[in-house]
Length: 113
Length: 112
Image (cartoon, rainbow over all chains, first blue to last red):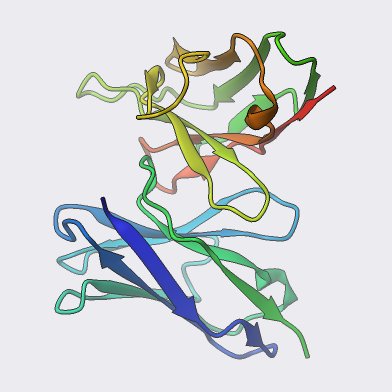
């Protein structure tokens, strides 16, 4: 049973860079795209982007200019960086394989001066 | 982007009564491989979404058979035959045929 464990800084100031990492445990890392998804307080789900084990990425055009997703296959981990954050980036961030039950528990990220 | 539109946005149901949620997509979700990439999730407070239905009508492992999914192309429905207290939360549909992956706005199910 694949499990995702995610971690990263939860409190940022405006203009800083959000950085989160997700570890994949107990299952195959290869052959899938791994995503980041976020959920602002009280709102719905927004797909941020994805990466596969070859490092091929796809990003949501709405965030593409600020997003970098990277992968470390030696550690079965993938990471999200979101630059120049503002209060609008305050959300719970999930790592996941969309279309499956494989989701991290979520990390609350707050952007506040 | 494919726009996913759910109705209603909220639902209050008496235990034992049925419930139905509609999800309409702005483009067909039928892939050339024959699969239709429409999923239903249930999210409870403080938790990640949990998969209920995949590819329109397949119940995920452990999901009670009171849940069923149907539809095709652009028009989909999630039905709960007899609502129980544990079914409360927000239901989201999601499409995975085209990037960016997109979700419906969510439908909040409450118990009367």
